[in-house]
Length: 347
View (cartoon, helix red, strand yellow):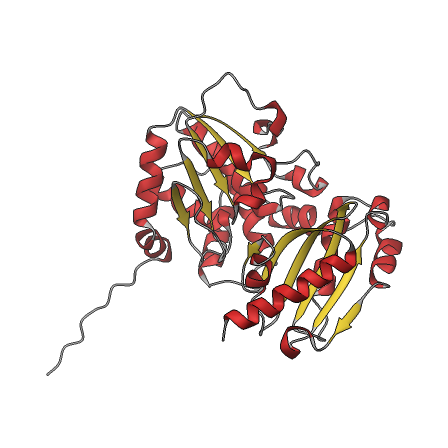
């Protein structure tokens, strides 16, 4: 008579840690040799970038390492991001001390050197650059790369690493990590079941999910309403784009965005992506005259990380971004060319 052998179920936290164990060990060893570190997130940071950077600095300091964080531009962040704990450790990039030897630079939530902004040259020429990220399009540009493309957010990856590294999860760290997980999963709509286990662990440290959700994805001032009207009057639909996949795009000109804050500009993409016409939606944001940041989203057909990649950016299959210089017409032409290249590369 056959006897059933009991099967051992590996807890999700242990399973992901074992898969990434080699990378975790390399990063741990590098940090063991570090006395001074600078953590850098991508330009035009979002909650995952800020949450990752601030939580990483808290962990580094807990381990006795002098650390600050920054990003490679002088633009102020969205006001909503200021609610994430850890800004006391932020140093503007042009105020980084020149007389202190930095042992280790750490890039978090950054898929390419282009997204490092004005700090790119300094970081890639450093003695030690650690890259911690979850984007499919990551270029592995570090000396040590801890990249998990299955992780829902970079903060999710850091949660795993902190457990292996022996870091105590404080309420402020949990808040920062939860902020990245909440927003990068679009309020837990996209991801594996274990993201809910991770969220439960983080909330168990004390953060208020209702408050964080309201702070990061809550309301907007009255000016947002006429602003949205002006932006959506530019909406265009190109059904033939991407070999018939279809593209819907809207434009946020530099003049139009002057009436609102960064949060309102960034909120546009979540409205545009609700359209059922076209597989791809793109928001063209002119943060400086003739300098555009593009937010790309897709539903099922087009890998927008490839499209963004051909324009110097990157991201995920269904959500990506890049920056392009030129007129609006130049940007749309570049977008068309990138889509054709992406489709041709799949054949």
